[in-house]
Image (cartoon, rainbow, N blue to C red; front, side, top):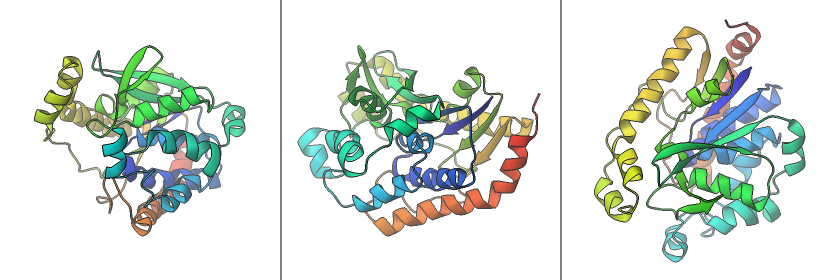
Length: 284
């Protein structure tokens, strides 16, 4: 089986959106998809076959305080508005095609972090019900700027805290060949978390999560190295920006958003012949 692995990175995920739109335009299909944080938020549009949806709504609502703002953080505890982003927008303003998502038959998994155990959890998204959209929110809820999401009897935050590049999880699902989309260049390595004092204070009731954040950079760098190792072994195809993207976790400039998206499109188009050869070649 073939798997598609989608790293997070908040607004850096617009690079991924560009890559995925090119995949859809070229009829590139996978047997499984697993995404974390923005990879989950934006990756579901690949499964539903909605070319252009991700960049469209991000540009349209880039400056809308309900979408992402400090005022939303102060008023609600979520920088990315929980109700607006995960319910109002996909149900009313730029409708997510639930029927197409379900009809695709492609299993779509997302990664969350259990704040009580400090471990990664994996959830298969079945449809676009309110409960399933809350799982998407949980996967994307960055620490310090998001409320803990309580769902299914658990408490969760951003999956990127524990499994930012879920390639091993995709392999565990039976995918012997994978395509991994990263939102950082090959030379990137994560440093120790600078906000640890604040994290220790805010999440003092969740020591396992605090410990996970303390060693997050170590885990991330190991995952990054494993991704490149599997690429050399011939079982993984990596797509990533050649240099740092022109935006970070948050962006309110539609033109910069479009730039990151176009970088993703350009990279995907450039690599398309090699990708098609990779997918057509049997791996043992």
